[in-house]
Image 1 (spheres, helix red, strand yellow):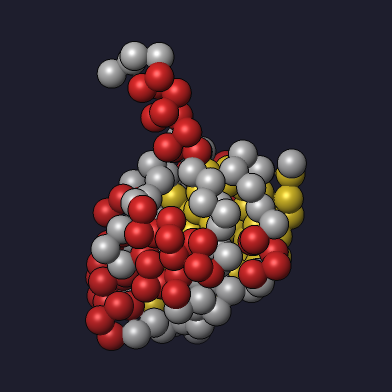
Image 2 (image 1 turned 30 degrees about the vertical axis):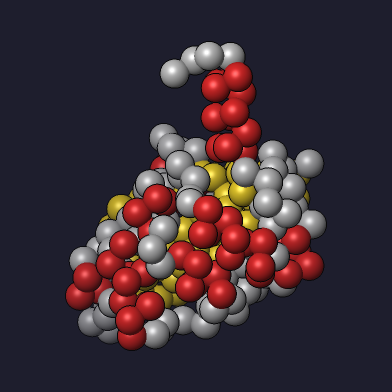
Amino acid sequence: MDVKLKTPLSRGDTSKLKVKDIVYVSGIIYTARDSAHKRIVEDGSPVDLGGAVIFHAGPIINISDKSDGSKDYRVVGIGPTTSGRMNPYEPKLIDAGVKAVIGKGGMDGETLKALKRNGAVFLTAVGGCAALYAKSIKHVDNVHWLDLGIPEAIWELEVIDFGPLFVTMDSHGGNLYEQVKRKISYRGIH
């Protein structure tokens, strides 16, 4: 089933999603990688996490100067980074209100428990589609913690029909990664 969602997301938006659904997101999404996750947990978030969508990504940014002396940021490419690195922090962000996490490779059992507790989902972005995903970004609204570096900063992105994204961990305990592992194990493939 194809589903279009608008941020901020509600529990009603995400709890109806099931593994294998295809999702497109419009509204505001935030990038956050290892350093940003750690700082959010330790110091608090610079953005409202209620109903938020967090994308595990380090965008490629074109920076130019505006006539007023400020900077203009344009995303040229944005693809998912491996989500497992965020396992120590993700349950806390989900408990703080995040309703969807976008990444690749899935996450651990503690994150799945947090998804279930909060009616949230893990969405897989397809690797190799950085230019396609960038086309859905209409504007960079803000950047937080640029001191962490461009890939690690939190980028606040206005998107329209950002996707396709695939529900691979849902709020009902569904986990496509585990389903595939069981099939492989059942067939004796190691």
